[in-house]
Image (cartoon, rainbow, N blue to C red; front, side, top):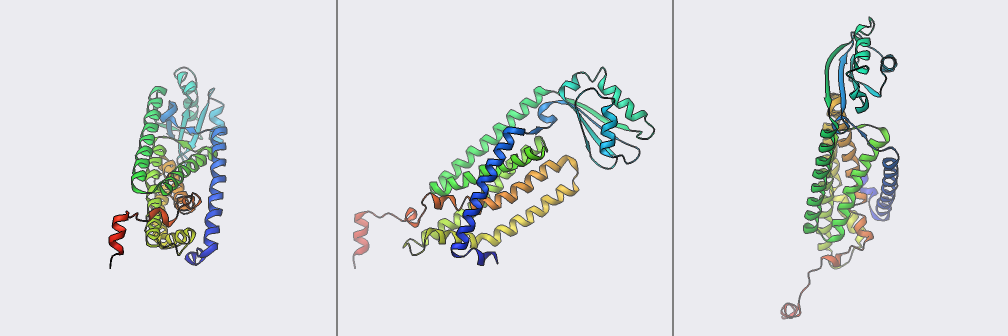
Length: 314
């Protein structure tokens, strides 16, 4: 059904509508990032992280309200299960935890007969270590992007290469925008998932780009328009793309649902990256080169006068 819908002007119109939607989503993501920013985890901000369990199931809001009465600083409480909780204190609260904040709320939850909490672990991460990890992570992402650009410049004609790079940037911005909008914790595992998204998005774009290039070389006589050639390239790779993305999404969804809270951010980022990466490989990586004037002439083999004379000889 999808292959039928991608035929002719309908397929071209669908690709351009998708590209317009992508542009709108990118602008919204950038606006969200500038207004709300990212919710950096303790890996980057530093502070205290305390894990504890309760003797019975306790509502998150009820427990949060109880701790707030015995905690003077900023904190964030998350549920890891029905009776397993994680409390994150801001760096400002961490500096005073040895005096008032931490003993007060810990004593309150452990001595309360209804909650009867048991502290499992309490660790402190310095902000200096977080800054170093953030700088190294950004450097790794920058190095990956540079390597990708060099690879695309060597492999493709500049229009196809630019389309793949724009699709890659599009995928990263949308994932970051989602994390900013929902204020999902951004930690080292999420940063690692962004590096994985770079590779996956590039793979999708290269599959489509390779097929476009092959069909352009075959249609060097310009019988078919560039839009028709691109539609044919997408149709010929669509089944493979959907099967690959579907199996990968099933694996990531299993991690999301079954691996627990520590890998939830990682799974959400990968799941989103795979979806938008598949979308961008069709609506951006294959469509932007068409807007930039990609045609079969870009892949014509240029023959000098002497060679042409030899070819024309009987």
